[in-house]
Length: 130
Image (tube, rainbow, N blue to C red; front, side, top):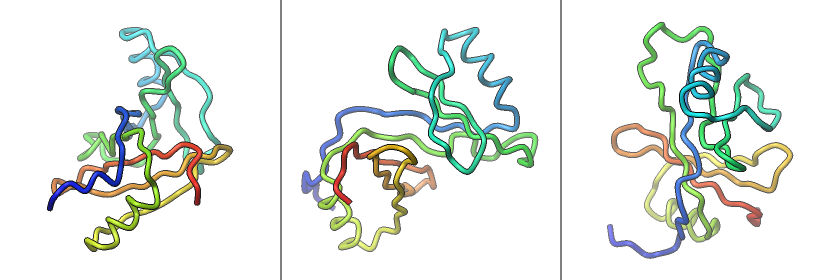
C-alpha cells in the first residue's frame, strides 16, 4: 500500500498500560521516573494518567480480574494526528476495521486500529470535526 499522506503524525501521544494494581504502577513510575498523577477524563474504567511536565505520557487502566501475567500489558500506543476525515476514508477504502470514540469532557477524537501483530494503534485528533 502506498502512503497517501492523508494523515499527519506529529508525535507519540501516550502509552496505554493495563495493570491489576494501578496504585503500585503509579508509585513505580513516580518513584523511579519522576512522573506525577494528574487529570484524567471520567472514563468508565478505573485508572490513572501519569504526566511528564504538562503531558500525560502513560495511561494506566485497571484490570483487577486479569491473569497475574497479563498477556498483553501494553494495550496500545497513540499518535498525535491531524486529518481525521481523510484517515477514516482511507481506512474504510482499505477495509480496515477501526473504532472511533470521543474522550469525555474534551474535543479529542480517538481512532483505534490493530496492527498485523494485534498491537493497538490509536490516532488522537484534537479539536477534530466529527
